[in-house]
Image 1 (cartoon, one colour):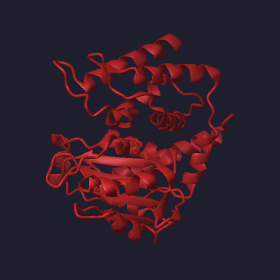
Image 2 (cartoon, one colour):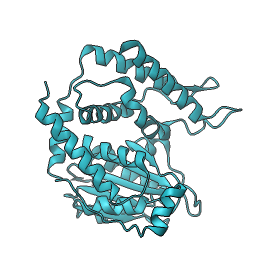
Image 3 (cartoon, helix red, strand yellow):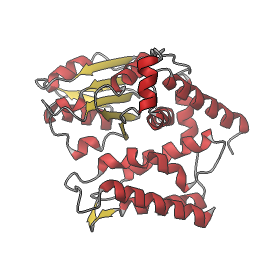
Image 4 (cartoon, one colour):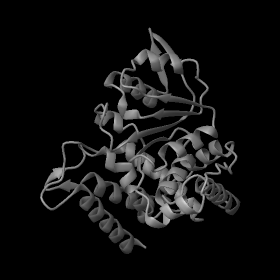
Length: 307
């Protein structure tokens, strides 16, 4: 049993985090929800920020980096693995790694990041350099293709969420242009609470009924196809594990000790879209987004049958 006091505490931290993000970004409400939940559900979450220029990616990354003991690596196309290794071997105590312009680096440098993400260590000249828990915030521009390297599916799969920043609507543009909006960058939570929240999520165990329901949801996701072509190469175990952490955290913020299948809906695109087989493209009048939206309808049906 999770006490009422704990549930209320989780809700307060979540709301404080959203408030902090509101002082930095105009609009992008779904982005802020996914960022807040991702940060609070695990102390080693890896977030990729994708979008056009001017959408707030760098502003938000800079703000988050300011709240932690962080290291920023601004990627360039001529960077080599030793450039990254020499920087990071002196920052084994970092709490957040900010990689700016992630898709401007070569595959060899990406391999350094894969080892770091997967094993929380680097190996240099046969010497192992271990790190503690740390967040990863990486940004990439989706419009500018100059100097862009291919990012492998294995690399993208190491990011827990790929958060796409949407273009601003007219009301949001008015706020920035005419209301003199200036990011206040007020970090309103105690970062010491984050390991506590992680332990709460670790101790939030699902009963048999919830497990069965979530298995139906995950099987639906794994079976998604576009004109009989599977979107994924297999089971998304790594993605499912992080999705569970997200929905557990979200359920707690709603004062619940149980999760519902529809808790995953706001996170589905962000957790799974970047993991699809990159050879699967738009076919005919259908698109990958159509398949995702259809799966969301099926998840609603699961909720209607069980709740």
